Length: 243
Ligand SMILES: O=C(O)CCC(=O)C(=O)O
Image 1: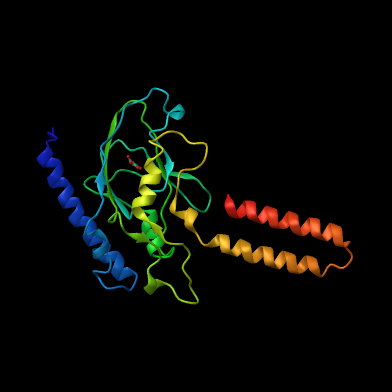
Image 2: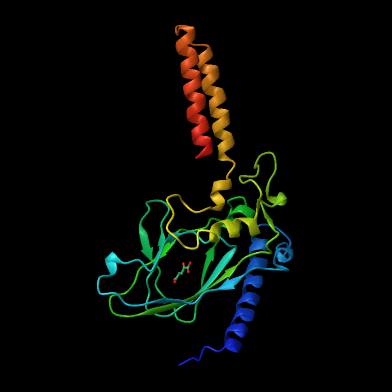
């Protein structure tokens, strides 16, 4: 049995942080960037560790350990016991796939910040945790996150005219505070996510332009109905833009 002292936790945090730095160096190389490209973001990092305990539940299909989500940070390095329960959502068909625990191995999740930095070359995976009917489960995720003053946006080296930035810049500290502001309450709207900063809204504006151009050449419509339709399309696009 392991005793969880402050010293043990601090030592663990330091070691898993070193591992994360190594992983970030490998990711940088995989993107054709210098090995130390990401180091500057972690000088005053806001990384954290969570200790998860999932008690057993006799009717597990009616309970959720952790609801479906994409990690918001850069990387998550997850240690888990041998009980299992973590599931990832397969993109092609939306099916939930169980992740079989491998002894002495970590699970590494790509977070939303990594997705933004790489301009979608890396993609954050949706996951959730189911509880077990007989056994309790423990897991320890380490969430690698940058300094609070970091402006999260696609790296300039990975964008150009052919491959423009897919996300607008967002201040990590403000993002985090906004997110935690809900204090884990269930909200009526989805909590803030990095994919809310996707530039795809701009495409919709292009769409409005195309539709209006098309309408103005349809001469069979009376002027009044044309105006109403244009107004309707603008309102619809504005609503889509806002929500
Ligand atoms: O316990 C796990 O396997 C995953 C935990 C998790 O996704 C989280 O804490 O955000």
